[in-house]
Length: 100
Image (tube, rainbow, N blue to C red; front, side):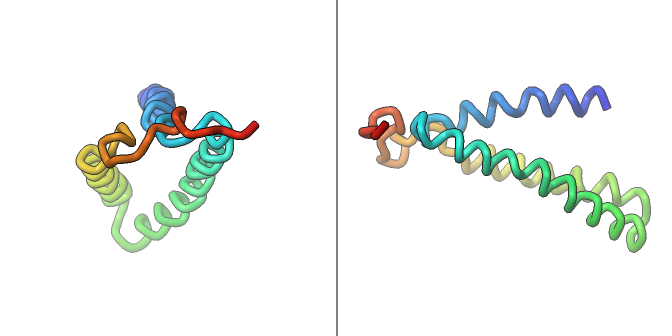
């Protein structure tokens, strides 16, 4: 449990760093609010998927399937994450005109 908490606590600053260049200060509250719903949706869906996996595939797969899924997601993010909007011809969010 301690390892999980430590890993998750380090993830949020990374999400902030990756998403901040894409959204203005005025948009970030809404965007990060939507982003944070993944914790609630993930916990509900994890219970259902874990129960199904345990009943139909055995207890070992309860550990193997999520770990495999996270490895695939990590590789996908590593290969596809665009850190800077300028890399794709967009202006960073802080350079857009902002309305109060």
